[in-house]
Image (cartoon, rainbow, N blue to C red; front, top):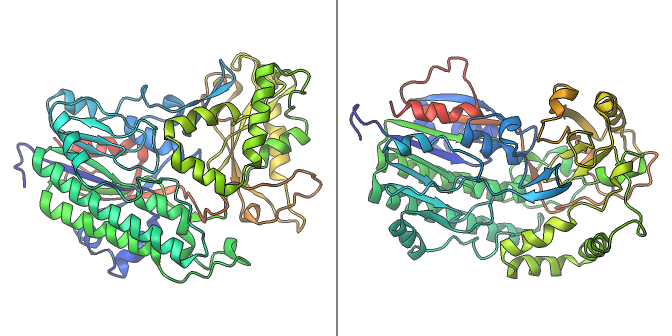
Length: 493
């Protein structure tokens, strides 16, 4: 353990670990390391910007700023100047650990999602050894001898195919995924111990992303009685996800014992809850109701026609071929192929609002004059357009009269604020009824095609933090995700 003169901090994230499940496992003595940490520390509820989208939580943590400042809400972001999408690269984000690194405080960072290396000459930086959320840059970090050490270590079992897609009711699929995640957790813990021992950083921030990856595909093993799963043949009874939680706890215990840090934080920026795929009907619905219009074939450029044909070909490609494509094609290549076809070719002059590609919630952008290069909605019509969209969406029901939308988040406070808002204008949160298959919207002819049908988990908004150390003045037991970096930094002083 360090002296008071040079205090050390160990911050470990269990990415997307569900706080209610963690609490339950602690109470049942199934996570003894976290229980011991909590006995001498404090439980904090973490309020994150997850209601905007899961892609915004890590940039918020990294920069200590709000989503409207850093502008990241997804791996793909809308660029109004070019009326197109661009892949996240993280180059515009300044992490909170840059300041201590510049003050010659030795740091260690390991697989922090959406982050990039600073180029430190001391300590260690390892990114995308294996990550659920990837910039597509591949393994990176430093110094050179550290990356050589990492490359010489055993690779993560999921590295060969990060697009593992287990069948929810297949005992063998889920067992294989669980075993790969557990093996990866153990390798990650061992590698982290080696990196910390070799470099002795004062500040270490590392992430276990395996629970995030597994949670999307096997949440039904943790919450099998949730109404979303009723009527589905999800008969798996093994607690596969709980096994991964226990494996992570064991590695955290070893890291805490071996490091002996003065301040320790174990946290998750958001959690997990039940789902069955993700609804993806907003684009066609907005076209049906006159908010969007697809450009006619004759009005499209030759490039637009080529992209329309490519998009249709991708939609009709059998799932087995898609899986093979993602397995054998480098990630950077799949990103280049995906971007041009993620949005249809719109007739922008006749499009007032449009749906953005989603990874969980529904995202809608208003085609605002003065913000979008081909905007069609004047500033004085922004509020009215937004209210029309809300009225339409909140009134959607299925044939049984069940509401499909739980609530809607507006990300701009006013029309003037919207002019500089980098986020979707509306974030649509689905009601449980929206996850049903087949799904029919009353008074609509839109064909419903959910995506990621094998996903049984979506993100819950609340995270948690178990804090043990000095300097915590959060007497109300609540911390904002953007403030966790400052809480971590307090441990160094």
